[in-house]
Structure formats: C-alpha cells, structure tokens
Image 1: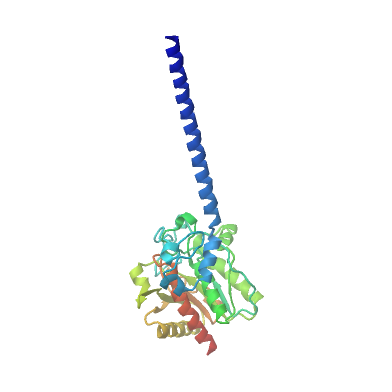
Image 2: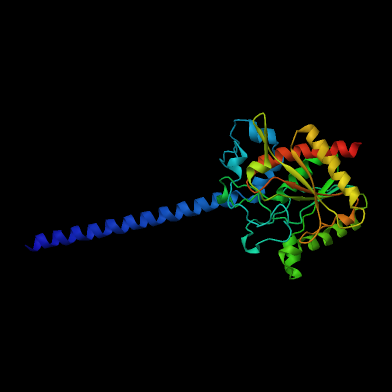
Length: 322
C-alpha cells in the first residue's frame, strides 16, 4: 500500500514537472516570436519604404510582375505598399478645403526627405500647406507608413531634378509652427507663408512656388485610366482676391493645357476661388508664378499619384523650357 502511494506521488510530481516545462516552453516561444517580429518591424521603417518609392519608377511599380526583395515584402503593386486606412481623414471639401478640418482625425505623420542632397540655384520650390493630407494605404499599416502629399512632393522633386530642373522641397514640419504659435489647423496657410518668405529670402533664383494638395472627393472623380494605367486627376486652384491674380490664373491654365495635351483629361482645369468662406489668396500674392495643385484624392494610391507626377514633371519641363 505504501509502495502504491509512493508511486502515485511520483507520477503526480512528474505531471507537475511536465506542465511547468510546457509553460516555460510556451513562454519562451511567445517572447522569442514577439521580439523577432518587433525586430523585423523596426527594420522596415518609413524611411526605407519611402526611399524605395522615390527610387522606383512608376512603370516598374505598376507594370512589372517581379517581387522586389525588400525585407521579403512583395512590392508588386503600390496597392500592396500603401493601403486605405481612413477616408476623408481631414474633413475638407473641394470647395472650402482650407477652413473645415477636424484636427482630431489627422493620423498621418511628418517625415524627412529620405534622399537629401544639396540643390544649387533652385528654380522650383515645392511645399505643402497641408502636409498631412493622406492618400490610400492599401495594406501596410503594420509598417506605419502613411503616404501623403509631402511624399508626393519628394517624388516630384526627384523627377524634376532628373530633368535638370533644380527643385527643392520645404521640409519644415508645419505642425510645429502651428503648435509653437498656438494656431489652429486652419492657420496652415499663415504658417506656410512664413516658410515661403524664408525660402525666397535664402534663394534668389526661385521662380516657381508650388503648393501640393489632394482633393477630398471620391475615387471615381479623381481617377483616370488609360490603357490599363491609372492616374490621379489634377485640379488647379487660383485665388482671385489679390492684385495681379490674372498672371497666376494664366500660368495655371497654361500648365493645365500642357498636361492634357500629354494625357487627355488628366487635368480637370482651373478653379477660381474667392468670396465669403474661401481663402481667396493661398499665398499666391507672393509670386506671379505661384501654383496650387490638387493631385488625386484620399482613395488614390501612391502609384496612381506617381504616374501623374511624371506627367506634371514633363509638363513643367516644357513650360519652363519655353
């Protein structure tokens, strides 16, 4: 009887030891898996992915069927790169987009140019009064990448400099200016004005000022497809409540026409803005060569935007070389 009880106790102890060993095993497995995934996630930063975008042409992103080995991510299409997270994150409208933002919904983040270099005697100054206007984010929210109009500026800069048109991008975080001055988001044009004036004072060769935005309407109104290739449509906005706006109006119309000559119906034309509830100036009084361009909407992917940026770059080249 005593021997039976001793055997029973030994079995119970063995079971307990086995359970403890299982718990230890699963605990270590979970910790290892968590740390490994975190390591991989940390490797794939905003900078890496954006740098990949800048260095990859639109044709390669859309038309090739190859898998690009960037930490084993399939970059077959930019739809994989960047996914829709929230539509209309900034509650703007096509008509009064500067005064109707819901500041609590802004989720994109500022990021620095991943491909910095010195540009001598810049001719074009790209900036974004609303840096965080976001594009579609297809399925890589896990990598914390939110494509926005600031990214579009960096990509356009690359394309213009490749065409030997010296171009710079305003890299200052406009939100910092808003926070320092305790300004609401609707004061973004006031903040960008400070940056424009500073850029003009430091670069006497600047001739063109281009403020890049995106529209807020649905994708069927902001997308053009030609030969199975999709583009984000363009809209020019010109304020008409300052002296001499006609020069900027003519410039916008001319560039719009050149774009449509290269890609029919890509540009929706020029929208004149003024009157009650509208900005009416958009800092365009600072130059007779100031443009505000809306490229696509919240549902357009970054590859569609990139396709359009190629056309805009070529059109600017033709405009300037005239």
